[in-house]
Length: 321
Image (cartoon, rainbow, N blue to C red; front, side, top):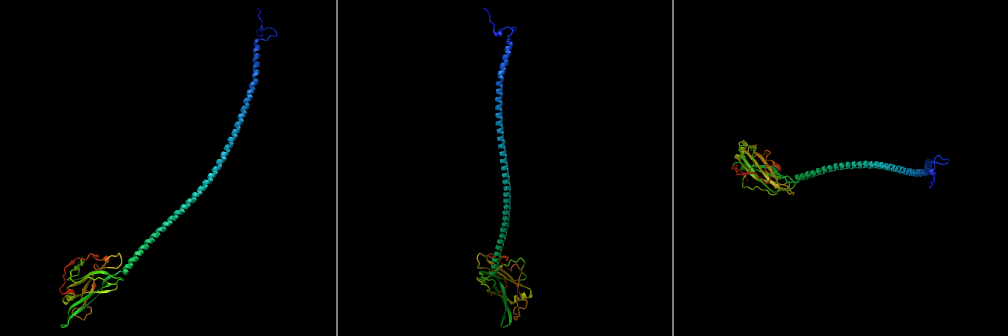
C-alpha cells in the first residue's frame, strides 16, 4: 500500500514546501500574537482597577484629612474652652480664697470681740460681786465696843473712894439689825502684860453673857465692872495689870451669809490717883495688841469655835455688878 505524504512529512528540499520546524515556530508566533492583546486587555483592566483603588484611597485620604482637620479644630475649640474655663476657675478660686480669707478675718475679729465680751462679762460679774460685797459691808451689822464710862464709889462718912466702877458700851454701827447675838466678857488681873501667845481663854462665870438683838445704830450697855480701891492703887502704882477682853457673835438678816464675830482686848489703867474722887475720868482704856482686835475672818477664833474656858481666878474685890 502506497504511503501518502502529509504536509508535515514533506521533504525539506522540495520547492514550496515549508519545513515542519518553521511551521511550529510560526504557530508559536501566532499564538504569542494572539495572546498579546489578551494580556494588554488584562493590564488595562488592572490599571483601571488600580486607578479606581487609588482614587478611592485619595478620597479616603481627603476624608481622613478632613476629619483630622475637624478634630484639630474641635480640639482647638475645646482647648480654648478649657483654657477659658481654667481662667474662670482660677478667678473663682481666687475669689473664693479672698472670701475665705475675709471670712477667716471676720471669724478672728468675732473671736476677739467674743473674748472682749467675755472679759467684759467677767469684769461686770466681778464688779457686781464687789458691789454686792460692798453693799453687804455697808448694810451689814457691825458690833464693836464703842466707849467706856467710869465713876468712883465714895464712902459718905469717911469721904474716901472705896472702889471704881466702869461700864462698856457696844454699838451696832451698821445699817441693819444684828440677830441671835451672844457675847462673853473677861477681866484679867495679873502682874505682867499678856504674853504674845496668850490664848484669850474665857473665864467661867455665873453672870449672864448674852445679847440677842441689836438694831442699826443702837448702843447697848454691858454690865458694870467694879474694881476695889486697893487693886486700883496697885494698877496705878504699876505693880499689877488689868485687861478687859471678850467677843461677840451674831447673824445678819441677809440670805446665805456667814455668822459674824468681833474680838476685842483693852488694857485698863489709872493714870491719875484713884483715891481722888474729883477726877471725872480717872481710868484709861487702851486697845491692846492686834491679835484679839478684829472681825470675822481676821479673828483668832471663828464663829462656832469659842476659846477654851478656865475657872475664875480674879481678885476677890474685882467683879461684875
